[in-house]
Length: 354
Image (cartoon, rainbow, N blue to C red; front, top):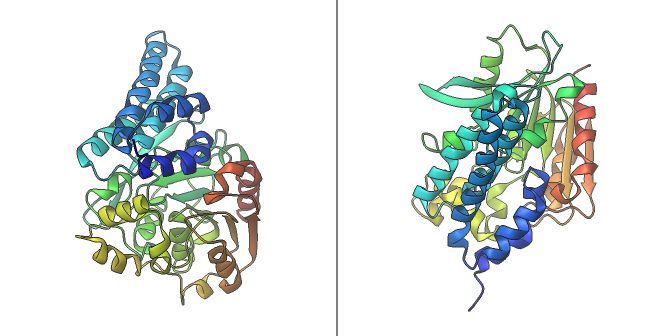
């Protein structure tokens, strides 16, 4: 039997990310070794997610709420990774996505620190996010977190974790074309529009310090975050992780599953229209408007975002820059997360004067 190239690519390129963001290595190995076709990917991950969900419910029934929260969180990550690029089967994808949302929602009240599901008014509808605040801080600064093409607020527990013990709140949200936002809103290049709505929402909260807002973005969010920083001076510092400088310019070299996901989530009728949509995602002529401090991370061996994109962003911004090029790093340097996760949180704490 000829190997499924989609499955081969998934197994060879996604392992570091899944493990770094909450999947047990043995589960990754068990699941991927059992598969013959990428068409079975979502089912297999959902079945293993159900195992972790069952463990969570057992702990919940015994009143072990922290254990239940940890297991619900893990189950949500498994459901998320079942759905995250499975756009060719919308029914399966959406079912797994709804389970991911439900599991993280079940986890939030008993996580450390706990989380709150928030509703952010946007274009007559709603964007949804998760707010987590550090314990013992009356009015903390807040890091707004922009996810990528295939990541959602259900994946980001590991990304959030370094900020809370350093005294920062996190507000991760699903924007247009992302997570819960993908159904109502297409991907848009001018991501400063939804970020404005999020920061406007922060200003309505008396338990957050709206004068100390950081912006963080991962993968395509690593484009969204500096894009927002170029337009909104309320952003005092920015972290860009593995973000493209010009998505349209990179289009022809992107992995096939990535192009298809962008087509679906930008609500394009075909790949030709998707490529045109991709051309609206560019920092050309805008990077020079970024004057707040920025911390940029890229892996030298990133197969999605060329390292030259990070280097170009570092050259063109006008504010203070720290560029961390992880020489043996893959996309977002997930295979070397210990090189930048804690360090970038330290950097953000310094910028927000904690």
